[in-house]
Image (cartoon, rainbow, N blue to C red; front, top):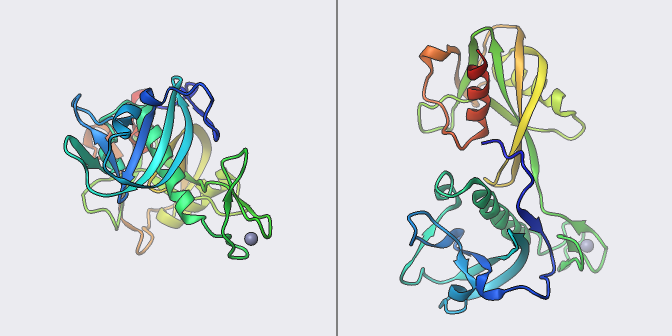
Length: 275
Ligand SMILES: [Zn+2]
């Protein structure tokens, strides 16, 4: 569950000369969804052999790097899914492919989104160009360099003895309860973000903050940093327009919680397993 081992994917900007094109993987996005083969029961990217016969209009193609020595590309295309292929959003890949393949598809989508959103310089408005050696866009007029945007966020399980605090966001369509989460503000340490977010969302003071691990969450570009924190004081008071409900739950009376593909669930399971 926690991606703690070295990533088998090695990022790169320029394809190596010995790249075997027929065996490469192409993450082809059509209207924001991934074109995939479904021949093995779970989605997989298009191979180089399949890619050369696709009847699609290609607007962008970027080399990403290698996954177990297999070259990977991300492609932006226009058209309809050819016969034998299906279009599936990134969320449809979650839990249906090996975890590192999901993160690779998430990486592909983030690279493509960033290429699309940084075509013009944010400072002077000129057309940007690909940086020669880095994954970056550079402005030829003012020199501004823009890297893919990653947004760090904290996600925290608050515990009080054998109880854990879970909350339901007002925007969620289901009755699911989860751990608290929020974006890091400029100037904050990660630990300060934990204190602030917990106080803002449920009016609780926490301490003994411990870091457990992280997860890339490509919806659209978060890096979730997961913590456990101990209850110190305060009564639950939900932030208006943000938290619909928050409660203390025990292991034998849990509400609906996130699936095992999410870091929130890993934080919950890790704590409950230790009880
Ligand atoms: Zn510029």
